[in-house]
Amino acid sequence: MSNKDAMRFPMIGSAVLLSLFLLFKFLPKDLVNAVLTAYFVLLGTFAITATLLPFLEAPFSLAVQQRSYGVKGIRIPIFLKEPTDVLATVPELIGGACSLVFCCWYYAQKHWLANNVLGLAFSVQGIEHLSLGSIQTGIILLSGLFFYDIFWVFCTPVMVTVAKSFDAPIKLLFPRVVDEAFGKVPFSMLGLGDVVIPGIFVALVLRYDAKNNFRTNYFRSAFLGYTAGLATTIIVMNVFNAAQPALLYIVPAVLGAVFLHAVVGKDVSSLFAFNESPPKDEESVDENLKASQPAVDREKTCPLLLRVFTKLGGHHRLEDYQHRGQEPADETQIYTWMDASLSELTDLVKEVMPAARRPNARLDFAFVYPDRKGRNVMRQVGSTNSTRVGGDDAKTLRSLNFQTGDYLDVAIY
Image (cartoon, rainbow, N blue to C red; front, top):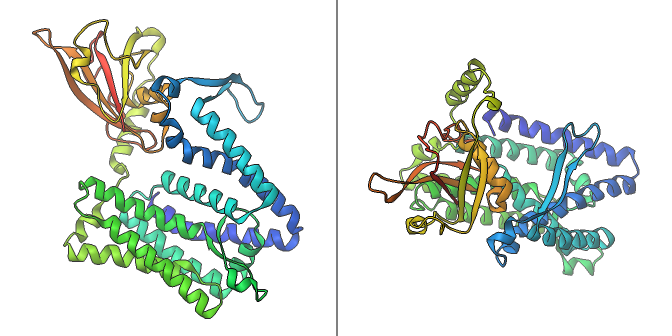
């Protein structure tokens, strides 16, 4: 996400919110809710499956995790120009079946607990897939939505009307047992935006901690700030018995906690400079190179059989390669070319390794080859991210001096 995207976000959110308000005003509420609920049930099936997948994969061996089932070569006119494969692993099938049953129960009963499970699944996936890129972008986004939330809650009835009319898992529901006896609304509501938007900033802060080997502990401050802001929202809501813009309290609490931590730790400049996005200069250089270089006709080049060994959590031991014919069992053989980039190899690994398809999974590449004395050595050559562009993506086997017969060892984190 760029700074301009963050600036536009409140305007886009306002347009969507106003559109929903008009839908509920001019169309039958039951019809709108039926269509939107069916849509969210479909999304919820995938969201719950993706959230549960790391836990479902744990009991299965690597061979079972890599085995896919499904239909190949599906054609859908208009929507798909080329045939596509619909494949799923055993853990994905199990998770999908359980999620579908759960979502059908939600559709039939609309139980508040099922609503919250779906809402939390959407929140987890949103935080996992959305990346602010930099601390500055996060400040712009949170500041813009701070005023957005205040305006639509305090100045107009739009936000509250949509929240109460929208019978779908876009909010978390908390029973208010005491109020039920007095005939009041039996639920307090917290919009998913009040979870996801601060959540992606807290996740960014956590990645900053990881970059510094967790010496900074900004995550703890950000999380405590979010907890304090949310608690303040609940207290004010109950005292005044009126809807409250949660970001009015959460945004100052989160940003205040993080920047107070930075001031005390004398780390303000480093925190502000943190940026996960690739530099624009590198992007423009890559685009210029692509435009100036002719396309490679790989039909005229000689493919090679690449022996790839993958492992979760780290590289194989060098001793595992000492004896020819007794290499690690988790081998994949790939036909590729010497001009194949690490980005292309990442896509090939993702086809056979479900773990490599996880958002923000890191793939570390290493060559294993014999030295002049005939002893195997391992050389790190680069790393890629399953969802984000990185500096090593454009490196090719040829530029890394890969030799036919070398092994490729891939560690997946």
